[in-house]
Figure 1 (cartoon, helix red, strand yellow):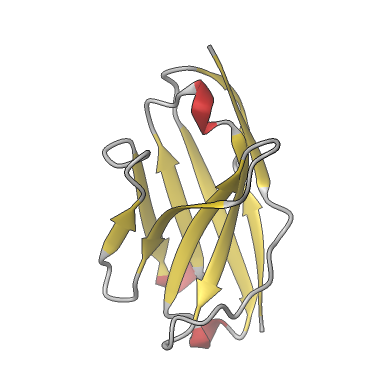
Figure 2 (figure 1 turned 180 degrees about the vertical axis):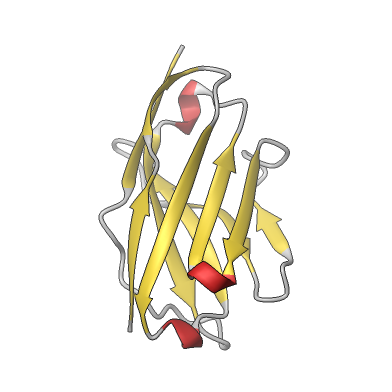
Amino acid sequence: QVDLVESGGGLVQAGASLRLSCAASGSISSINSWGWYRQAPGAQREYVAAILRDGSTNYDDSVKGRFTISRDGDRNTAYLQMDSLKPEDTAVYYCRAFDDDIEPISSWGQGTQVTVSS
């Protein structure tokens, strides 16, 4: 089992940037890939981005070109660089870790709130 702690959220104006971090502890050697998700008020949690162990990345169309996911294996941390933020990016952001079979090996953390004002 892997425990994750998200951080880096805040209140910003449209067009600003934020960098979210996701720090892992526990069975970190089993982590193959990371994913970022978000949940807006009254909405279901949705996929944002993912990064595999080989560094390949994938993004939801809504954030493609604005968000960048990365990982720091030495520090067991994943990041989400968010640029050109829009009010519709307002949500609680969560990360999750996956094993080689792309099965989740972490439960949902507490998330970090991102609020973008217009």
